[in-house]
Image (cartoon, rainbow, N blue to C red; front, side):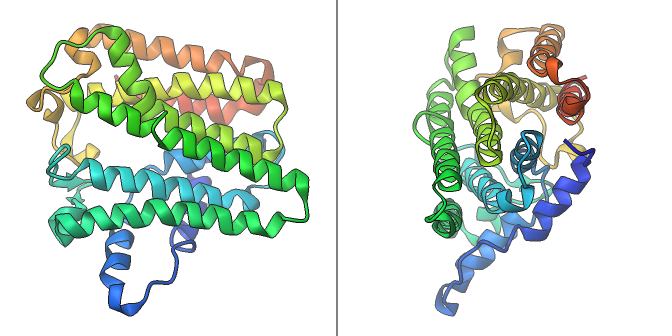
Length: 298
């Protein structure tokens, strides 16, 4: 993989983030405005960046993966809009700005999330139609879309959200906690990496190694978030700290001390990096990415 920085990947996503939204009739222009509001409100772009990096890591052309990377951010953004709703986490701030429903109202926020989710699949399927005469590239895209669908749906993020809601105000075992966060957070991160790998034409070994990396990274990312909610800086996070405890959410600090959480975070990060040891310097981007997960939770 060429030494392309996180910032370069992020700039590429930001440059194209609105390109794949469908044209919306002026009579429904508020829908477009609401979708655009949350898409352009900032964010780390972690999932689409991992998709592009994985595609390039296995020898693919990231230019051809941009529709899928942007679609991944559409899906992630829809999940945040719905997460913030009064019926879910009832948050008023996201990335330092008023949440979507605070600006556009609850009904429009729901529809904006629906619009982003369906726009993601419209963007990916529109790209797939360009390769009907190339069976190899078409199969790669079908596999990528399947991975994204699975990671975002009832065997991934949505399942994790359900378990997370039902675990509120209850004693939660480590097994259930891992289930919640593997699905709620890690599944979509793993889907991003696997989709990028498929688009780039990964070998079976590359796919296995990247999957192991992503699954451990995804859990590490969630633990870092849990730690930040306890002791993070609200300005840096762009949202209020202490929300998890206030809402009696199932989090790692509920079961473990902060020191134990930090040790688990470090262990997961090291395990993630171990999957890519055989690639040496070619895995530098992914190693740096993982190390930053530990830094977030310190």
